[in-house]
Image (cartoon, rainbow, N blue to C red; front, side, top):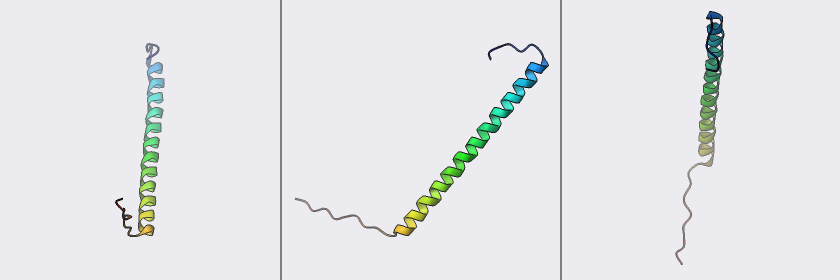
Amino acid sequence: MTAPLKDFTDLKSLQQKLKAQEEVRIAEAAERKQRAEQADRDANVFRKSVGNIQPLTSKNK
């Protein structure tokens, strides 16, 4: 901490700051999870639309 707590009002403001920071972390985690799930769905749509693929044959020279 930058300054020592002098009374309970300082503690209350610290509590509010910590609560706000926790809410931001929770929101960011939810956003990351949502983006990861969307990326998985997009990848699955791509795989299904492409269908079966076969590797190219290589000619040994």
